Amino acid sequence: MTTTNDSLMARRQAAVAGGVGQIHPIFTARAENATVWDVEGREFIDFAGGIAVLNTGHLHPKVKAAVAAQLDNFSHTCFMVLGYESYIQVCEKLNQLVPGDFAKKTALFTSGSEAVENAVKVARAYTKRAGVIAFTSGYHGRTIAALALTGKVAPYSKGMGLMSANVFRAEFPCDMHGVSDDDAMASIERIFKNDAEPSDIAAIILEPVQGEGGFYAASPAFMQRLRALCDREGIMLIADEVQTGAGRTGTFFAMEQMGVSADITTFAKSIAGGFPLSGITGRAQVMDAIGPGGLGGTYGGSPLACAAALAVIEVFEEEKLLDRANTIGERIKSALNVMQVEHAQIADVRGLGAMIAIELMDDGKPAPHYCAQVLADARDRGLILLSCGTYGNVLRILVPLTAPDAQIDAGLGILKASFDAVLKS
Image (tube, rainbow, N blue to C red; front, top):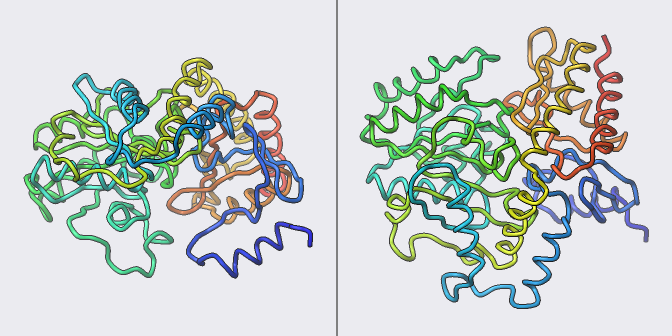
């Protein structure tokens, strides 16, 4: 029997839990750099990158070789039982890469949600406080405590009841949707007045650039005000850099562009080039607030993922991928700005580095229907895209930073054809 996307989708629906979503009805057979081939042999340009996981592309030769070499030695010991040097090396590298002019320490885990939850654990242990302030439209993961921090019910916590207590919601600044920096700061002050004293708050957590929320970037001025507030009240500032980290925004971490540093930084996704690795890096004295055994996980910082991460960091240095991220970003935004002139429904083109978003509106209102139609039309033409945003009306581009210019231009050509077909004036 011939394997097809349709036959695999039928098997998937029979075998896989319904809560596991799938954006595109496509099943991958193989992939290389920014190209994916499905089980039917069709070729696609990948502008999704596994949701910002493949900044160094599918199966970068250096990453592949590093993992293969590690596999010849051992695949697992559990670092908490028998250590290995690569775990220490990754921690040393991240202590250097994470912004902040202070001594740092790092702990490694498996998923972004784990990183977020452990960051909160560390903040609570250090401050001896329980409350956390998160922001509207923020996304921090699908595990139970991370869901409480995530500022969007559907689909992430729909039907699951109320999430954990001690989380308070502030407004994320977004001029496009009428929330100024002053409004956002005022919303924190309202929490202090109505819900919890500053002395009850262990941490304020936010994404420097919101991911699922729509790729809205916090301004350096806002981040500096937030830093000053945290310093004044003894609150830990947590930067969730799971999606922005590993060079996506043109600096290895987006906070490098904000003029201030977080007390604790989370990372995951692209740090290991497609292998599951996450972690938190923070002030050394803060990170040591939890004693031995309080942090970790069976697979956290696996030898294969650590080998991959060290290779990813080398690739960034050798191939100058931070410069490449900025070059790609300008190339993409320049092309999108031309498309925006041709289609009034393209309300905004934005992004730091190569973290690019296109917001679609219809008569001043969010237009998720246009977003869904463009997504499907582009797929039919051979381009894989993702959507995001509180209203589902934002297209996001997360093409591998290693993609050649000609392929990026080809992808943009497909996107233009889809806009022309869907956004008819």
